[in-house]
Image (cartoon, rainbow, N blue to C red; front, top):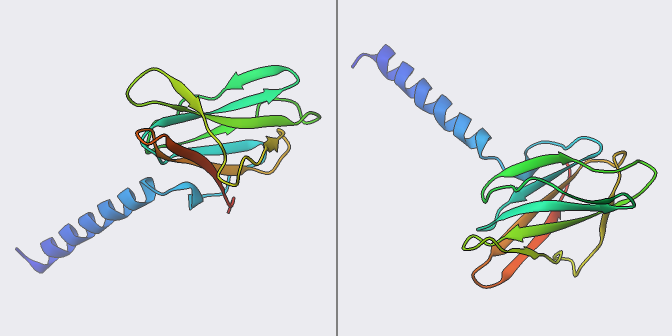
Length: 137
C-alpha cells in the first residue's frame, strides 16, 4: 500500500469518526432558539413534553430513547404555558408522569421565552426516572 493510499484511508476513517461524534452529540451541542424547547431521552424509555395553558393541553411527539427532539412552545406570548414531561414504558403501552430532579420545580415558558433544554434520565425497571434542565449554550 502506497503512502498516498494510506493517507487517503486515514483521512476517510478520521472524517467518518468525526461525523459520528457530531451526530451523537448530547443536549449541550447547540443553543435552542426563542420559543423552543429541546427534550433528549437519555433513559431507557421514550419521553414527550406536555404543554398546558389557558387554551388546553397539547402533547409533543414521542422522542425515542437515545434521541433528541426540539419543539415550539405551544400557546400565546401573553399566557404562560406549564411544561411537564411524560415517559413511555418500554415494555407496555402505558405512560407515566415524571418529577423534576430539583424536587418538583415548575417549568413555565411562552413562545417569547428564551430556548430551554431538558433531558429525561433513569430507567423504568426500577421506577427511577426524572427530567433535568441543561444550560442553553
